Image (tube, rainbow over all chains, first blue to last red; front, side):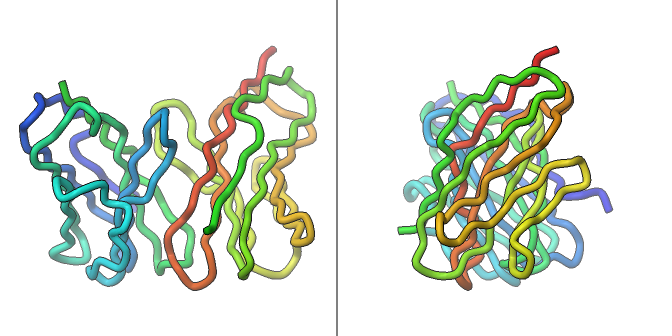
Length: 113
Length: 113
């Protein structure tokens, strides 16, 4: 299996622009997680899905952030409008179920100027 | 609230020396405990985990961790480190039946020749 796939690997954008991050989980995995990693706050869970349904989005910073999982093989994290403080590495992870080992993608490094 | 504390943000050691990376958690309910490793510019990889059973768990590359319920600890140890062990190590916990991982701040292990 190719593992969790994230795109793009790097994104540089200007403040106010819309940013869409994409994730393809490992085939057969039922749970998908979005994390954000910064120097100041470490690793934070933003949202996770189980069987394509959002279970916990309490970590989503504000209304500018939204996440979807239209099917079992694809998820997006959208920031609109983006701000410089959104600059971070965003990781997607998937697992067989919510209590199983999570497999992380390589991350998307977002820079908002 | 559930939390994970990694007491050391950086641990420098010489090659072939033993190392212990400390992790304490706070929880009044059963937990599942994990250690993840992040090599530079990569995503996180599972190193080892404790779900139940034997309190001593081992990884394939010589690391081990012991779940100590009375001390609420899950310290990571290796008797002899290699240069290639240089990475950041994250302790994490899943609380009860919830699926979201709560991560510690991470410990940067730096192995010097």
